[in-house]
Length: 579
Image (tube, rainbow, N blue to C red; front, side, top):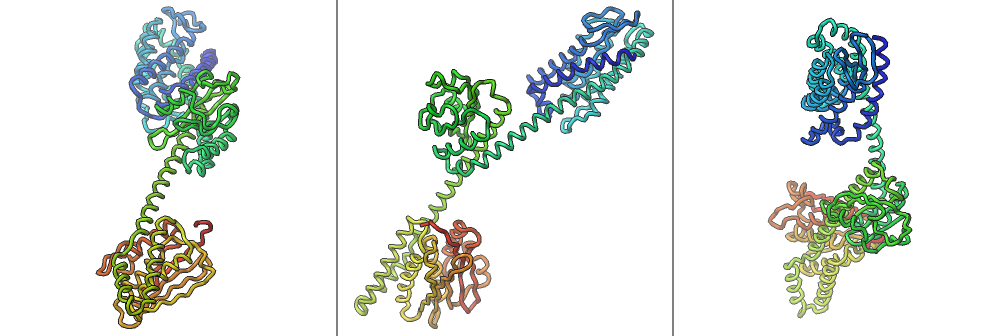
């Protein structure tokens, strides 16, 4: 018994090789990840583990039950011989990783093979191989990771059951009993340890690959973060060149290139003297990637370089996708195809996906900005027809009685509309220009209300160079006229204040009108507020524009006491260079 232990443990070295090889197969990765296999993958798994079991049989040690002598490898088995082997390990692995179907399938292959070799235990070993697959399948857990002690226990248990089947099936019993006494314990221990060792090796190999994959994912994220400022500007020569330069410094390849549908946008690294920006795409493989959206590996002859001495010997081409549309490619060039590793393939795959997401974000931000600009321009183009008609009526009435005043009002009206029209083509104006627009509007309103309206201005001259979105003040003072002082019997007062503030410029418009009802004050500026005098849309739009352009700190603040007036104010942060 003792002289069998060491040879059996030596045979376990084969397990190391098989375990490493099996990690290269996709079907096994699917098994480890507990994913559903296709029919083809299941058949491949059954065949592989069945062959693994056959190898375990061939590498076993023959034992002659009459002479009590051990042989070497089990290529032929006489009628009085049995095999001390590691066949169970492959069958147990099949059941533990794949469940009943794969376990029993592998057991049938390995069992039929063992039966065909003969020997007085041939039938018993054939039956026990199928039983081992069924037994291992019972310990299969689809949504739980496989533990080492489970593999150790199942491997030992399966071999124990095999010894019991040998005792029950093999004849004569005395010969079978002596065999079990001799090889039983070494095989139980060796196959239990072998099953655990098989799992341990696979787990370590996969963990190492996961670590490498994690490092590549981390590198891809780092590169994507470094290139985000450029790729969010869209895919063009400038952004592509910057991105390629950043990637080239971090990735050990010969050159990096980016293209759109038609031309090379950037090429950084070797061969940049003839792989030039702006040249048409020469490689048919690049066009295939753009058309199919699938990554491709090309050899030297497939690069179609016009230079015979080009140092670029192979390339990996990955698609750059914006949503589901391929908008270009990312290329990694190397000197030879041997330099292309799985690590490189994973890196370019992850990086191209992240760059594609950045292009999607760029497109979404551009669309959002266009929508905001369209909304602002629509607001800026709005002119209240009633204001125009009332202004013209006032001018008509003043022409005969006060022609000079009529001329002043007409000039103010002209200035007002000129400012309105120019505002539709400008995103920013100075606070001084906005104030002139407001003064033109209020001059007309003061004339309309004769001596019932008086406007006061408190302005810091140093604040007038600040920048503001056009038509941000006019809706505030218009709100005072419509809802604050329009129906006031006593003289109406409006105060326009522009003061320098620690955080920018404090702008406020105050009236001494009737104020705002408490139930409406809460929502005013935050949404449309229906009333008999309007919807509150003007204040809502101004508030939305300020928040969009400056953030929440520029939000409108409305204070009002019923019967005592209203103050609308906001902080205008200073923005340089926005004219």
